[in-house]
Image (cartoon, rainbow, N blue to C red):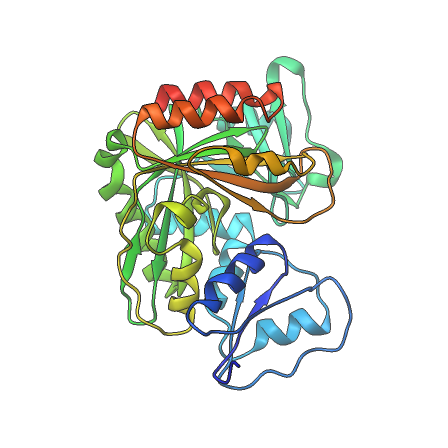
Length: 358
């Protein structure tokens, strides 16, 4: 029976469930809470801690009480990062390379944006939006214009002709100790993460650059817990796309590919327990299961671990993921050969991408 301080989580989705599982192995009671209702707030002890599995939540008694708790970790990060204008302003102030941008205010015209940022632009809502939601493209060649209700509620970013997309998962504790996983290579489609691959020897030359950027950000925010930085690689330089003050989909490979997962590190850091550099195990592949019904045959894939979120099946929704932990290209091919018979044709380009980058 748990008797010590508890860790409460704003949100009870799959990330909250994974944090709960990570807490069980070290006798920490992690309690994810639904925050989309006006129910009665729980009773928190002064020694309890609070974290979040998401950047945005509705204003209601439960969310308000958790966010205002004295031990809510990294409150400033959520204030800064939850608003994309504040986030981008922070990057610029710290001298961290990020996508060229400007605020879309009431006076901004589409001509202003094309003049400042070029002929292909992505609009992003200042708050909310994930997996490609809350975004809209503007192309001068199509005579696109700013939707009326986006004025004052969005930023505009220059479209970047990047070489590839990578992310860095880092963890920091209250004493300022920082730990990083190897850079992760990511494949997106329409803003949704399809697959991740780590570690890769060819990404090692960018590791120090990425760690410097993320450490600078975490130190500035006095951040505690796991923070994720998604970047574009352009030649030998990294450019921040966005960051997330939480555990992240692109770090799910750590559940099988490291001695401590991102969820383990987050719980330990937030609860003021010792953190240490995880050992990396083989090579890991993460494939998101999007809009699919449960298939028990997934568990027959060699070298695979299956994680199912038990959510309502909706088109394009993240319903689970499969991790492959392999030691060789042969093992990867064996796993993908079986998996290809169990997933739809839309996954075939993912297999090609994995094989070409392994």
